[in-house]
Amino acid sequence: MNTISKVGGIGIAEMILSEACTSAVLPNCYFYNLKVYGHVSDQDDVAYVFDEDTKQYLAYKPVKDAQGQFVLLKDLKSDVESVGGGV
Image 1 (cartoon, rainbow, N blue to C red):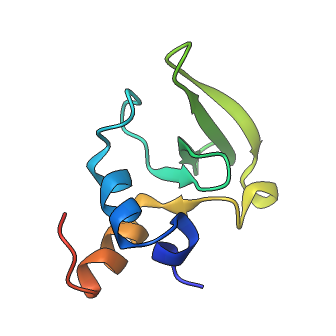
Image 2 (cartoon, rainbow, N blue to C red):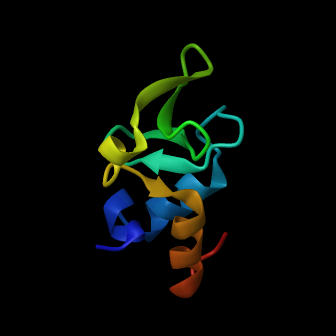
């Protein structure tokens, strides 16, 4: 299943990539089941979710436990571009 399918289609993917619906600073992933932006850190091997209410990243799970629950925004962008979408 590609990243576009995981998030719900090309329109949703383009909206996610626009980052218009978040105040997160420098998100690098999107948790598609939770419908929140996040950040996966290689440094401390933790996946963080962004809490829009408190405007902060919160530790979610170790990256290995969160695999399959998020798409990296760079991969989503690449997939959208490969099908001729915007962004």
